[in-house]
Image (cartoon, rainbow, N blue to C red; front, side):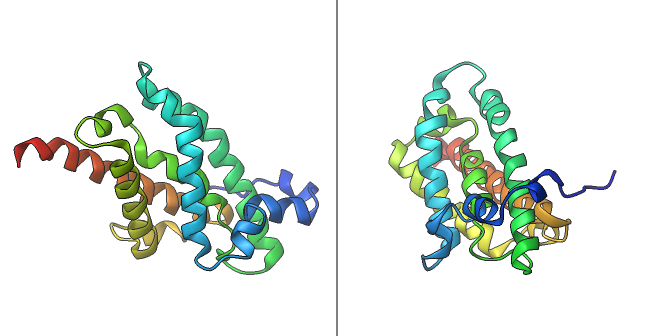
Length: 175
């Protein structure tokens, strides 16, 4: 199965596509736009997903609610890449924004050993580390076509962050 860039964003005006992909002025007017996109994604998690964390099956519901946003990011980021004429432009930060909540899948298990602020800071820093360094084959994911390559590497960085946070939370009582 070949991943294809969604075609429906081609019908949208460039201003709208770029506004979505850059989160308005956040991606276009700031230094280190990926860091700002990640910070906005952390705020997105705390407002919309953190309250779900104490429901049964919260990780499942978080994934269900995240998938449409990730698809939107694939569509808009890929179209913005095409319209800007550059591969994975730095100002396009919708990918970090949508991937960031995935760092905290299984939130209740992470909240047991540490206060929420500590988990947020650790998740944010680990996500930026994995997103910038792209270890564990994450860099290869950028080779996927269009918006898929832009978004999937951030999803992988978020899942690596999540796995690291859970591993440390599991090992913490053993120290």
